[in-house]
Length: 157
Image (cartoon, rainbow, N blue to C red):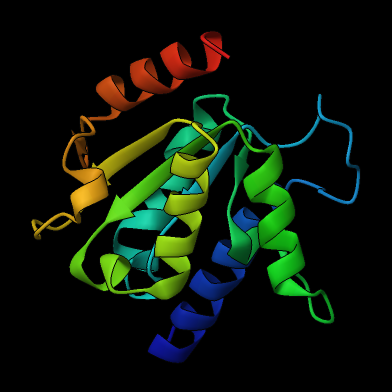
């Protein structure tokens, strides 16, 4: 098989994985809406965020990730605002590009303002903003610690 065919097959597998993990957010019932909002920089998607989302999904969590939910024609800011309001825990994928993103800042600040839990996951060592310095963080790859912290936070809601 030539390299182009290999690339096409890998792309189809990736698309199939994405479709399997999509949560329908057109149903606004609080019981079926995802619990976890993942906030991240697009530049970290393939290397860290997608594998993290897959691990959480495989661990039984209902995860909201914009790339899986927002469709053509959707008002993306309305969809993000709905998810920020309804999700119970925010996973913040911390990198320099994430902390420089106005949308990432808007997302984690919304959770902080609403007194909802933010769990920073450090995917790249960088200087933390003032509001994040006092929050216990988890290093990327410490999956058991992350799962335990998510469960603890969801059980305290």
